[in-house]
Length: 291
Ligand code: G3P
Ligand code: CA
Image (cartoon, rainbow, N blue to C red; front, top):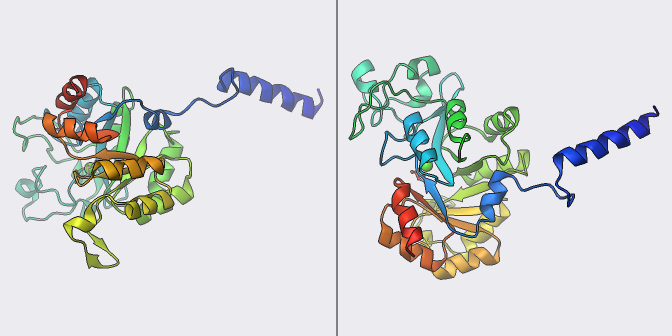
């Protein structure tokens, strides 16, 4: 068979298999979340009111809660493995100090094999045994089975994250967010398809400490977020209806953290927020159902 004919058959077959009848590719899970007709419920560090934050039990519960996304934080170990933990130090959420002595022990100074020895569940208000620090890969395995991972980068370069997303074919099966907007710029340049959230407010601008008023979500912040290629501003409670309107005019979503109170959630829904990041998804689901 002539090569061009063979190519045409292959292309037609591929379009039948991978494209819907309309010929337009179906939106990815991350893109679908941007089109949601209701505010999103996002489990913060997993269902962290119910299980030790940023551990597999917290992620399993986050998925079971029906959260639209389950958020986590990652760092790089000394040997370059992506490991899930919020703080830069191990003291608060592991037994590192008891085990190794000293304080302020950095996650980045330890290999994955060392980090794996730590207990990450006994510190919790309802202590759990046999809970280890998870890798990003293991966490994705759990969360992606029933939700969408909101990956927050705490440390490490964009190339490592992009490599993982490409290796695992997870581009736009997840959302990536960071407080470091240079990291987001890099990630957008390397993988322009990936849906990104820009975390704020930044603490400083051009080396100058910002006042509370300057930290509020504003058209200037929104323009910067749009310019770096992000799709959502992920902000604290310093958002109001005007800022939300300005975001929507720019086709940006606004997700607010960390809201564990139904009355506050109701106020934010009324103002037009697009998502709430919470330690307790049940509280937010109830607030959403009764608004
Ligand atoms: O997802 C938003 C939130 O996680 C940002 O703050 O400190 O909990 O990582 P933090
Ligand atoms: Ca986080």
